[in-house]
Length: 199
Image (cartoon, rainbow, N blue to C red; front, top):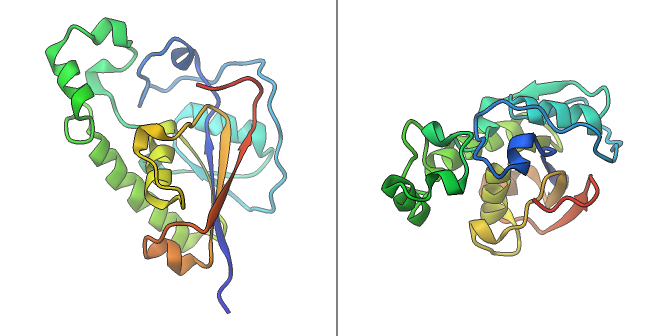
């Protein structure tokens, strides 16, 4: 009989750049200090996630003492030359307006398209599922929205998913094979790991 399989997805806690509404895809910023957060007890030997500081620090706060395995393919989309800039700083640039119309296909200058991000995230997810039982993945808003869009049992578009900082999604399948075959999960649950955060 097949064993039920679950994937846990956690979005990192916010940084100053997040609070200032900047694009900080590959910018390596620390999380804000002094937040009220929960600690989670999971029977797991390791946490997998983005190699960026904000994800590693989030994992350390939630899953105290559990080893963290870095995978750069779980990074946020790279915003290239637009990193650390805001909408108001970019809104008059024609190239930026074109990107807003089709971010899946169009890449920022020296950055990557959403489609390129989705490809590497899916590869990293399948690699993780094959190697790890009941993986816990700490990553970013873009990768989580993509995984939910592709695998959640409720069909929504990418931007319709609300993925605030410090949120945890747990997706459930009948077995590992169902994930690797691209099937949507049977169900998922949501938990907020920090107070008053809806970014």
